Length: 214
Image (cartoon, rainbow, N blue to C red; front, side):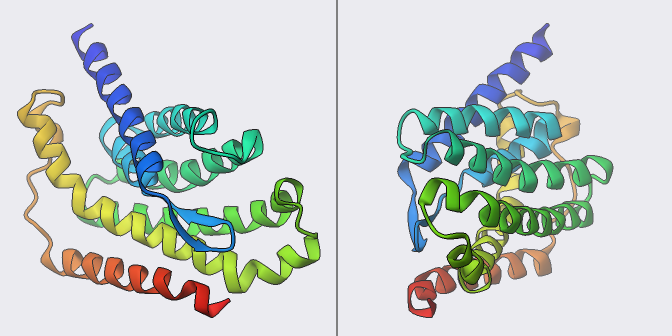
């Protein structure tokens, strides 16, 4: 009973944080596409509580977003859920099977690949329905706009997730919200941390230049 209470508490906390990230940080990148960091929170949740928890947080935070700060309605809500789940759930599934630094890296890279492919397909099929764009126009934008946006978004989320995971788990362990055994005692992987920082810097620079590319 105690563990269930802690799990519910953590899930609610991650839902609140994911929504807060969306409400506070919405950065226009290109066209109508905006970056928000909620997938970082959702993926952290998946790593800590398991893949199914990432789906729960994705659905709840997207529904709250739909009725508060979003203007894209139910279709936009579904797109948000699909995007978040394709990244976070994929990464969490891989990490659950291999709870090591390499497992986290492989999971995050797999999440990047799956999310990019899935969202290209969804943008092609769904964007004309809720944005009023002709399908031919959407097809013309897949490579110059949608592909780089999803790559930048996914790699940025992956890098931040990798950097934040250990500090977040350590903090949760100190507050006894998760057992000490789940905190992970591996030493910091300096090369991967450096690469993550470089990825973040590169993605930020690309975001700043996206409007000039299109």
